[in-house]
Amino acid sequence: VDGLAGLALEPDVSSRLVSKDLGVEAGPFDAAALEALPEDGWTLLVNDADRCAPAIAALWPAVAAQTWGDGAAGWRWRRDDVMASLSASGGGVGPHVDSSDVFLVQAVGRKR
Image (cartoon, rainbow, N blue to C red; front, side, top):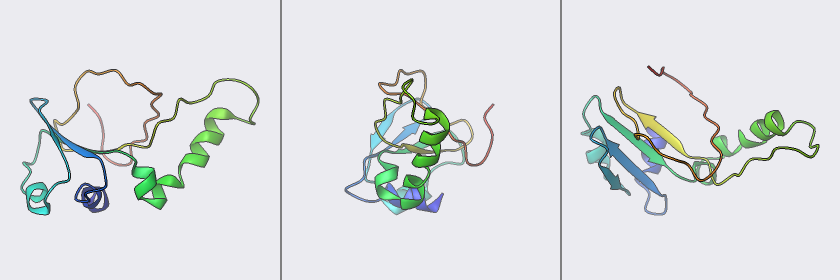
C-alpha cells in the first residue's frame, strides 16, 4: 500500500485518483493529500508499475508462462503495461472498455 502510494507521488509516474462519483484527478499527488483521503469511495491507479517496481516486473514472466504455455503458436496478450490499483471500500473506476487485454491479480481484500 505505501509503495503504491509512494509511486503516485513521483512526477515521472502516471497516476490518477478516481472518486466515488467517478471524478478523475491526475497525479503526481502530494503525500498529505493521499493521507487525507476518506476511508471509502476512492481508487488510486498507477500505470507502468512494472517499470517502477522490480517486484511487480518480476511477476510478468510467470503470468506469460501460465497463459502462453510452452510458446506454441496461439493466443497472445495485447500487453500495454502493468497497472496497479488500490481501492478503498466502495471505490472503483466505473464501467469502461480496455484497449488491451486485462489480467487481474488481487493481492489483498475482497470484491463484492
